Image 1 (cartoon, rainbow, N blue to C red):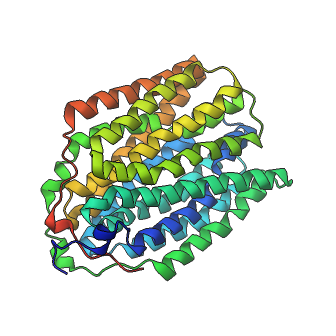
Image 2 (cartoon, rainbow, N blue to C red):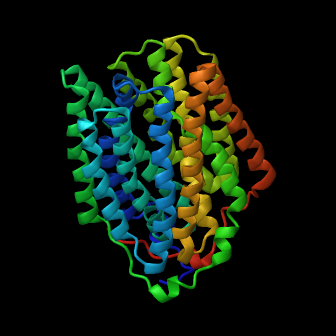
Length: 405
């Protein structure tokens, strides 16, 4: 097939099988991860951790992830290989994540979280680059939306699994240990179903360096947005502070992921038609308003609605942002571009929970959430001030045959 010819994915509206395979891997991995996450704030508190410790739990791990995403994306471009990084990264997380079961102090929990996230840092940029390599430009938003929808569906399933296990009498530590099973299933799915088209390493070394630089204004917006998006654990802490029980926390987390899972694919597809910037703006508007509402809500009943509404930002932004990166980065620099994109998110996600945790300990939850809301509003303003609405650019160099599963 010539580079400019449309693939079957364009003419039929279907995404390639490798996209579905990557989505299944994400589903299994998030089942494992989200069996743990909604239990972490209460678990950390039981070990004597403060809100600042909770911020460090999230922030330090995200900083490690940011650095590794940058490196793995660049190296996968140089090697012209994505799959080995994806397989190793998912395997590492699957094995290390259940070690929460043996954590005995806040700092040991932080160490486990950081080690778990190393795997994500190694796999994320190569995975997104492989996905972008495998689809036509006109369905990039949809493809990323499909993977993110399955990702959030896994988070929903994991949250419900945690609720069911706690209801059946399992302890937090036993739930953490059982998370090994879905993680290993996800690794097996990569080994069996994820393939990539071989590329010439010499060609990959001559990538379009200017493409990554073109992303700088957008990355500034991404970093500001990530400051507000990177404090999910504090939503659980707020619900717990207002009286949510250990059994209710996984259900609140599930509500959040119902929205993310249900809307991620259609919103990604909408960005293909309506434009990336506009869809991202919808998400930032929702995030600004919802975080502001978290600042003033003082009753547990409001948490159910606010957790659902908080899912809107990720649903709008996930596919649109990743599609924008692929639109501007040529095929030989996509790993590097996604590495830089995820690094910008990671640095902000490192600073956000620490700043919010410190503010919460000294000024209270209201001021902490207002800080996050204000940063989201600043991201929205920067989006219209600095980011052009031309990310969805059909580039003949970017069109490749779909990778088989």
